[in-house]
Length: 117
Image (cartoon, helix red, strand yellow):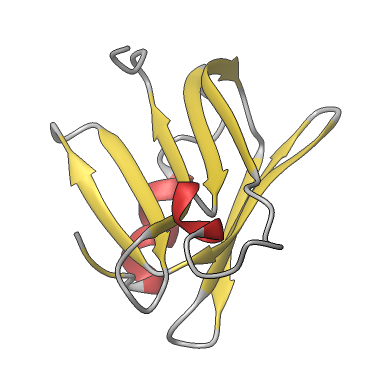
């Protein structure tokens, strides 16, 4: 993965507008959250292969950390804390947010084909 290039990611997100796409979104502080603090809670969310269509896509940020949002007819999907991106298999957009130690904190992926299990 490489640091987010806001113009490239925006263009890529827009290429999925008004198409039936598959979304993978995940947040986690992982099992490592409680390794050094026994009062810490592990939290996470995971949705894979949700089939959606969105009419608007936007990525914003300060040059280091970004938020991407996808506007659907009846709501929004968004991920905050994104830092890196890559096109996988030339058709799957993978956006991820990593902490200072390189651990995954958030992921948003968009594809016209389902993601593997």
